[in-house]
Length: 128
Image 1 (cartoon, rainbow, N blue to C red):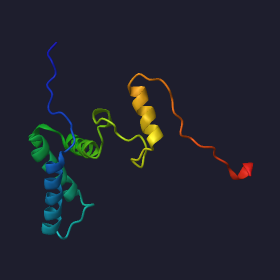
Image 2 (image 1 turned 90 degrees about the vertical axis):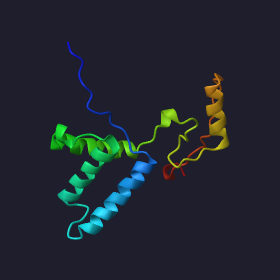
Image 3 (image 1 turned 90 degrees about the horizontal axis):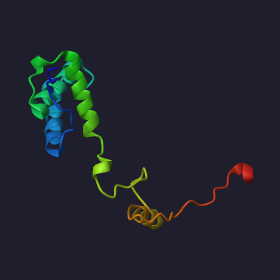
Image 4 (image 1 turned 120 degrees about the horizontal axis):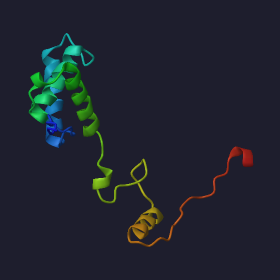
């Protein structure tokens, strides 16, 4: 059986590509004042820009649905975070850790199985 050809590998934009994309969007909207960010024309122009500038792919090899899906996936990847690949990524939603959490994480990553709990007692109105 013949091996399947990979047309492209989805990825997020890097910092420089994202800056260029933001500049493209601004310029496009300025030159198409009668249209806004919700227009189909704007959406297709952005999708085409990503295909040309991020992937260097020939849009003619893809269906319109594929181009739109690739564009959407690229935006998702661009806004994602590679937590598994960045050492010591904060585990809380606010991006902060207290010292006990850091010590617990460091201890468990060194094979030390001692767990440090920083959870306090919570009292609800029903308990008062």
